[in-house]
Image: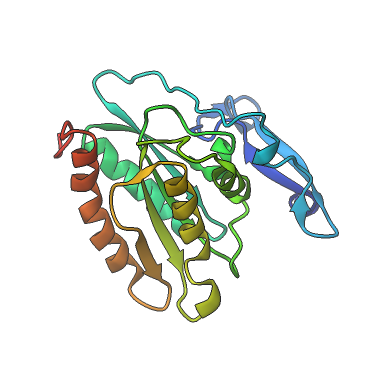
Length: 225
């Protein structure tokens, strides 16, 4: 297993998959499919075609979920902090009348669903994106001007202020790329400093997210169910 993880990038085919256990002679996940992509061992980078190789950014549509409005929450996380925050946003979204989908950012590396607001939670590692957000960042930075005109989004960045030159590097790049493509930030980018009170920073930012998001969506979802 260690050799496989060293030589391959492994990710779920369906980023929204939720674990279902099946039992025969052994316990195993039902319906779980993974994608393994060989790394370039000389650089540590996977051998894959980046988002720029997509002929055109694909903004996939998500079927409506009853009377709940879809909300996409993407994360870039090597150590689990950003993923944990993304899942907290997803849990809160469900109580506020949304139908949340929480997934690694690279699961949408060739486009986010049409007409659906999205939230990005990501860290930087020495100025570089997390392993599961590399392709998404490249996709975002390849978008033509005004391609995502009017799309509501929000960004929350995790990091450490001691790394002054690369502090919030990836969240800033994502925010700038999406704004250049015409997407509209609904709230000021949030920042969590690993050297401070990370949870307090996140709680303060997320408290303002919901009202701002409801306003951007026309006030249709402005409180808990």
